[in-house]
Image (cartoon, each protein chain N blue to C red):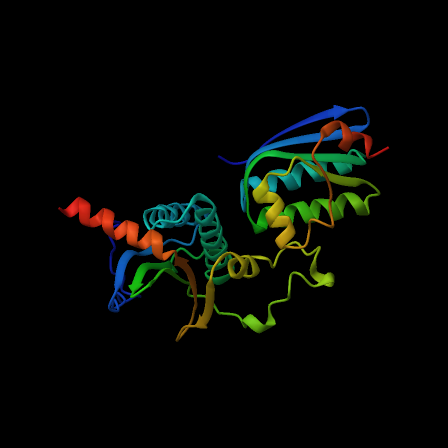
Length: 114
Length: 175
């Protein structure tokens, strides 16, 4: 199963719920498209909920990093929510865990943008 | 066991003593092949006794290696297959799953691949595949093939206890 994305608004924070696999091909490009689209529309506060992401490869990591850079360069912020153990391990191994602001609780994550 | 075919480009590898052939297959240079090879090697890893977390690391390493072979090596050229060879090697107290993945690309210098953990490279979009293979597997080797191509060998040690259990299970099945 490739990735599924659902975008919702919590106050002025855009939460993107992702599920499935973020891998080279459809999964990674879907994430890239939604982040570019939101940035183009002026959304500055984006919270990526990765709680139901079952698999992420280096291309998926690359899209997370690119999305982070794209949104940051546009004056916005991307934060991560609900990392699974495997995704957390992957971000730690690649030293990206310290790059992202990571939250385990949605309400806390949303408030952190204030 | 997966049936294997001999392609004119590849000669079947001679098995060394103690090696059991698990997979010897050419795959077209497509992203679908990445999924298929990953699934087949995951199945082999499960049968070799690796637990779920180890299977995940092996599967991810295979995926990264296959992507490199298909995308960067063969550049999606369907006339250039990716060759995958998997054996289980059992010698005395040691057992290993050995995966060799070969493309027919122009090759690259391992030493010239930027370190993805360097501060200047942390936010790069790509360049983490080889690093992840090395992190997830017990051993990894890259060698140039002649006249062209690159072969990556990924090795994962199988715990001796699991090997003994497996041999006992096989003997039970035979009897």
